Image (cartoon, rainbow, N blue to C red; front, side, top):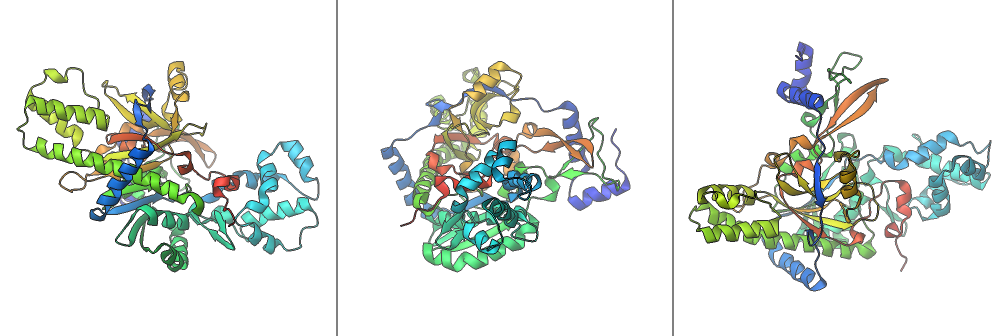
Amino acid sequence: MTAFSVKDQQQLVEKGIKEGKVLEQIETFKEGIPFVHLEKAAIISDGILKFNPTEEKELVAIFEKLKAKKSLLKFVPASGAASRMFKALFNFLESYDPSKETLNAYMDRTNDKDIKALVEGMENFPFYDKIKNRIGDNATSKDEEVFLFVQEMLGEDKLNYGFYPKGLLPFHKYGQHGATPFEEHLKEGSLYAKVDGAAKLHFTISEQHDTMFREEFKGINDRVSKATATDFHVSYSYQKPATDTIAVTMDNELFRNPDGSLLFRPGGHGALIENLNEQDADIIFIKNIDNVVVDGVVDQVATSKKVLAGLLLKLQEKTFAYAAMLEKDEETSEEVMEIKSFVEDHLNVRFVSNFDSFTIAQQLEILKDKINRPIRICGMVKNEGEPGGGPFWVKDKTGHISLQIIESAQVDMSNEQQVDIFKNSTHFNPVDLVCGVKNYKGEKFNLLNFVDHKQGFITEKTKDGKDLKALELPGLWNGAMSFWNTIFVEVPLVTFNPVKTVNDLLKTTHQVKEN
């Protein structure tokens, strides 16, 4: 039996976490989290929609026609630190001394492909001129110049880019200006999230970076507003301390810090379902902070977003009409079958095989439950070998089948059949969602009611030299949206341009073409 001291209880109160929640998490550690059961990969015509140009134009027209009556919001998870982008470069600074070996000798010795790519493309970084000016003539050789370049980029007493939030690093160079992902999201948002000249954007950020984001907005707002003819309304929120999860020892006992306090860890991006739940909008566009493009192709990205939003509005029109009809409890068996067919064919809901044997009253209750849910339209790109999750038909322990976005960590990699299904998926999740979070009466759903809490992740970490187990909450677009109605749509590859390492900025999609 886990016992909490008075000091523990005080710590829980300060974080806003109930004892029962911690005890549930400890039970999860003891029981483990079962792997998902992949039924099959979602593919074109079986779980993924693909529209031709005519259909896309029709959906864009629906969005353009109806958006004036809707409240729109762009929601951007932006708390990621840039430090991971520079992992290879931090290693380089520790491993290379230009006074003791040449750069070629270093690369031969270490086979450091990241530094090789950096050297070859260095002049194409958006911050190249800035760093070059700061280095001046201090380098005595080309090799030393590369070392000083990286040192200037990452040194704590220099530019210190590793400390920055990813959203505030220069990503794209327009003339002498380095545009951050934050700025690019504003510009992109003006193309599809604007109603009556105003666009609302919400960024989830780390509290330590709050001032930096607000200063960036203050510095660029006038210029970007004029360029896009948009009045930007930007808000921010932090991951809630109450969503942190308890850490345990390898024996599932409470892990304690050297001062005796309980160790809590951030619950991962799944914690942001709480932040999303607090937003009030008819349509919410979700996209990660590092997935941005340069001005030359942003129109293609915006059109893709409008297609997804148009599909959402088209589906909602019918969904809401049927939901209102179900509320009257007067349907004939023919109408019940009509609604069931719509929910199956257009919302990808699967019913138990003996549904037809239920009474009309029972069928109505099931349909009400299935149709009165938030809807997410998820863009999917063709699988190009990127690591990460994808779209699958998944069977739960009750035998219910649904469409889900599944990560590799959720799959039993010792099961050949499951591995085969996972590896042969045709599409990949770029985190490109358009969400409808209100019911047919215009009331907000409580999104916390649609989370599958059994879809989290248990990972092993170390703290102060001791092993521990940590719990990540169900991912925002994984288990946190498990019980939403889900529609997957193929979107162009140009919509997926994440920056996971600094060298990703050298890709053509992040290079501004000179006029």
